[in-house]
Length: 569
Image 1 (cartoon, rainbow, N blue to C red):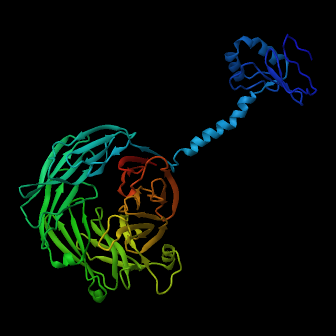
Image 2 (image 1 turned 30 degrees about the vertical axis):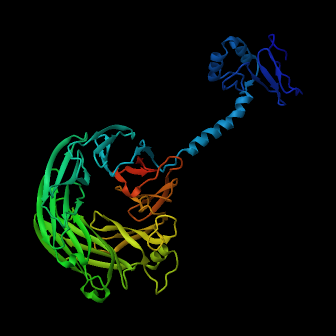
Image 3 (image 1 turned 60 degrees about the horizontal axis):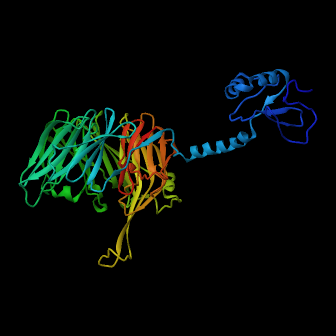
């Protein structure tokens, strides 16, 4: 068939030895199947083509019409008279794999995140800061408290972690002030501090609104002049962060306590409790405060093998200024570690821990204690570990003379809604050693080095009667040196349907972070959360704050610079 117009390409069913020829209307090349592929001159975009029925697609025609308006008649006649399809230029076809590789590389280089996203604030220099504390989210701003020795500053970040504003707390005196606690509430936050003037120590509370404006202030207590025993104050907060107790045990013979309620800005009660020598010689296991001002001090007596039959817990309960003492005998085993929490719904003190049969260096099982607040008899039950749990934690077979778990410590006790409890324990160990060095010599010519090991997590769920429901081991391995284990351990996020454990896979400048998702039945799944490579991040998960069920605020310290990382799930 010959062309119907001057310069129109011809179709020849026989192969042409010349692969390509240049025509007036465009570049074409013949192929062996008799189909002609045509490329218009100066084609710079992608296109479709003519279908097998010789009709041009609408999208392709619009694209060519916009780019090659002068050749519209030619392309219409070509589509009507021939059975051709237009091929993309070879140049762009060859670039398609490169574009795919480029965008795939960008996607892979982005930090991996498991089922969520994260935002990072700008770097904050901590050169002259004494410390900082996370307040949380108030309204639509995330607040950070900074202690700069001579001034105190509040910085606010928006939901994109950009700095919105900063304000100094000028109402707090600059000299002689020690910040004891910064307590965040739903619509305000409070700063608890003490200052010393002419030998008298004053304990005060200032309450601020979300804009860091002073709303109210109160004096909690004044401590008279004490030359040889200045007050050593410790703040204990309630679960709802509405009450706090300040204790002073600087004097061996007594303990001064005062309870303050923040919503009413008033002192609930104040009491001085006489102490025997047994309080200092024994181990004070826990100090717990309820939401209504119930204060508990749990001490342990006769935790020795030669006095095993006299082994017991003593609970001091202070409520409204009145006190009562409850003794819980625990004969037959030694206590390795224990922790107590107050169940505000059931008004019951709940405790759990690990016990040993022979010595306190190795745990052989778990025990559970309930002390009702209405005066009923306490409940005590203990169960031994199975050989399977011990072998998983020790990563070797269990022998008859080596049963037990070394270096296991309780980190948290999570109260269940049915009255039971979940023990969260961690294998933790510190090793102090000496190394020869050219500087920092001690008397023996050695420099002390501290090695920190934070390894597997042990979860034990207990029923209200103390019987174990399930036991789970979460494997991890963290090692650091001379950093006070700042970046080790984990952060626990509580949700109605799961527990989320966040932690660093390794303790180094650039590493990966992972999570464990634990269901109410003890099943778990491990996922990769993020990669800090090239981002100047070192996350302090143990100091993180949970904002809600799906958000967590984690501080990051990298070369004396602070960044706040908002994790979203």
